[in-house]
Amino acid sequence: MKIIIVGTAYPYRSRVSAFNHKLAWQFMDEGNDVEIVTYKTKGASAMNLSGDESPKNLKITHLIGLMNPVSWRRTANYIKKSLPDEVIFAYASSRSAICMGNIAQKLSGNVGIKRVAIVKDMIPDDANMLDRFLPYKFARNVDGFVCVNKGIAEDIEHFEKNPKPKKYSNMPINVPYGQRIPREMAIEKLSLDPDYRYILFFGYIRPYKGLDLLIDAFSDTRIRKYKVKLIIAGEFKDDVQPYIDKIRKAGIDEYLEMRTEYINTRDVNKYFSAADLIVQTYKTPKESGVTQMAYYFEKPMLVTNVKKLADIVPNGVVGYVVEPNAQSIADALVDFYENDRRETFERNVAVEKQKFSWSNLTKTIKTLFDQQ
Image: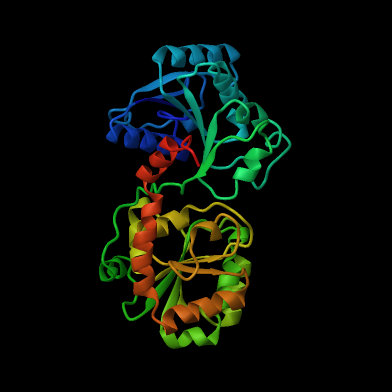
């Protein structure tokens, strides 16, 4: 099968590029002929360009000018001449909606070409007026959608003229952070006390991530009997003083490991390997790569009951989904250690992790137009 992926790719440096490269490789591993058609680099900011080597064995063609209608027509003509069976539009944001929508529209009428959209977010949480208007052109000119976040099918329907096939597939795991190592080795490399167990709050620290809730929860006196410490690993992106004041007031300084500097990529696996439980106490719905990292390292999770986190963490199977308040968080932490849930949850995470494979995504794309 001949497949063309339309979207960001090398030499652009972004998570979307990495996603498209991985998707192309997976299709190639399955015996397909794959090409990525991407944006021209002329005039692009050097900040967006990678200095890395070109991805091995990938055919990447630079044709598209984001704001250039002439290039849209040329791109569509190039795709038609390539005779693909399927064109996959890797939709990233409303910024690309008009461009991709016009290319897709120019492919209409070609009976042999199926136009598939992979959509991670159609209406972002912080949507502006353009986010709510621009996707119309795109949504009405593809034949079906594969959603890699739950809950966005309704957002897509807002832009459709007629209902089209939609399927959900978990966002595949794409974590370039090495492998899990033995806990004892990770503890030693991080200079942690081996007599303690550890829970991990990881990533940039922003108000919506609810570290204040976790500090309040960790202050619960019931937790002291389990000889557990909290690792806070990541840079503060807002005022650190309120957190310091809260920690001092609670008197839990000795039970915290504050690693609040930039965490080098080569050290990420050490933090996840050292931890029993990965905790995300978000107050508002936001995407998080930390959940995927927990799956990758096969670690149990505690997340709050907010959209995009709770959707992919089965409660009581791979960890906990709790309400975003200190009492609920503390109750789950107590249950985790009191009932020794770690090994059971880890086994379940290893099973659930298979749903986040690249082959699962390509299978969903291939069966999108099958009879429901």
